[in-house]
Length: 315
Image 1 (tube, rainbow, N blue to C red):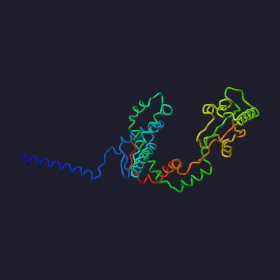
Image 2: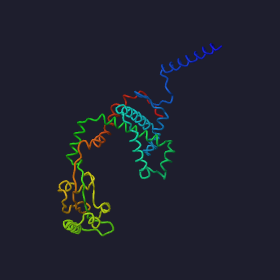
Image 3: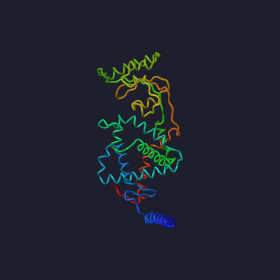
Image 4: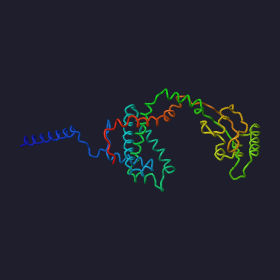
């Protein structure tokens, strides 16, 4: 009797193994698979989650989810995301989980300012879209791997040329600058004529040359509220972070020297350049690569993605 039971059990195992092998060999696909590409597939629920992630970070997407062309585009973007994430993981053994968590924590702090809608809290929005912090952190991690892959495709010679061009335009020059602004239209006061503003600027310069404290004079004379709170100082600031009207003066002024009154659209500036330095190619590398990553992504979408897609069925 035991022998007969064993034979029956063995026969059932053989049938099950054969059936699984037959279905696999005949290419039977999960009916919920909506996209197949070289190296992987995307299931319906997986793509619904991706759609919800897009709605979380870009709320305007919600209005386009009924448009067939947009849904096709979104599915292609999902495929691109997965392909680039997989390629990124293949070129590094270093986990990006800690970096992703740090980026998510930064995002959470900014949520109420930038992404709060109709008073929705972060947790309310996550619940509404059936998402979790772990899912979003995982998505960010995938983006990081994708970015690593795209950066690995960049032409080093092109990056060097980018650096040389930007360096020639002083875009990698960093400055510590002290400045006082005398405005033509100071808040809460009557407007000044150009002559009145210039006279006031010269008065400030005379006091600075008499060794009066720059930060104290900023609080007394400057019409820019942001300068009053920081003693008139911009620290380690790139040239494009300063008023373009005084860019050339900042470049030309010798260190620690008080400028003449510098005319600008809003009034006059008095400046002192306290420190000047230039970022090296290595220090600028991350910014250089980030500037070219979007172009690399666009090239991937336009030139490679369609050749990787086997079939798509946007829902």
